[in-house]
Length: 436
Ligand code: PLP
Image (tube, rainbow, N blue to C red; front, side):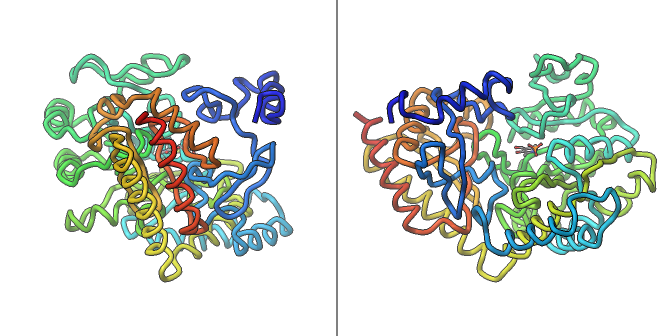
């Protein structure tokens, strides 16, 4: 495709005139990798088609929600039916109860759940709830974890443990982040030190259990265990941000994976998004009853939303959850993802390219590094020009992965072994170029 025939290009130019950077969420702009974003015309199953009617195998799946693939017939039917009954009422519906019951049935750490419209909103509300429930202000987050763009969470590490973080965004006053402490992921000694200094003032510790915003980095089992123990010891609440991992890495989400190694493991608050909306704007946060009863209208922690529990979004999310809990769904999804990861590893090895990869359920990540990194600083030692060549090499061959090396990838129930084989063949051809 030459620039003069690429129909994505004029769309991007037009978009840039009316939308900042031409996109409504920054990473879509391809700034990290260069080139022109693909403007999607339509999607079906594991594929989407761009403005040139070029087909791509989609490993982003709307950044996680599309676990069934695009246009799953049962979901389409439910959404169409719900839309006919009305788009939004601003009054309760039975479907909200059904979705809440469905989520709670799959996630025993929670007794109650509040539905909202985005992961950002859910994370921000979970922190307000933790602060309201504990009467404390401070919070811990980890470098490389993303919890949405709420002011108090757009923070990077300060110069040391005694100092709190500095904002990563213009427009966030220092006073707003003065209670946010940013620590290194998987660093137990630093975690213990932080609790020893600030433990009694901490409202919560928020963590992505498998950090998908630094590609794919698992919290080690000893680290997660220590997070749980220290929160309990100091009376801080453990918030698991499962916006990405929720119903994606296992039917019981990442918390069920950690509970296999840490007996009785449960977070205090869980934050959900992406898969629970099946591609519609829907997210949630939930906890045991005693914590959730701090929320308005029962308690003093205010939280509200015009479109919260939207009837079309809940139809989409509910049907998605019912599909993924059908027997065999997760086994097949996990096997397919594993086969992608194994195939990529073998292709890189065959071409002599340093490569490491990991996956859980339908989520995967890979690095052009010989070993899996354990924290953000290590992730950032990846060679980004080489990643960019890999990205564009795959894109040219009809395979769409995230346009930044610090993002995870997603396989859906619609991806077939043939899609995986096509992807691995494309990757091998690009690895050959990288090795040359
Ligand atoms: N938390 C995590 C772990 C995420 O990956 C994201 C988004 O990618 C968010 C929160 C924010 O969700 P949203 O983009 O729906 O606001």
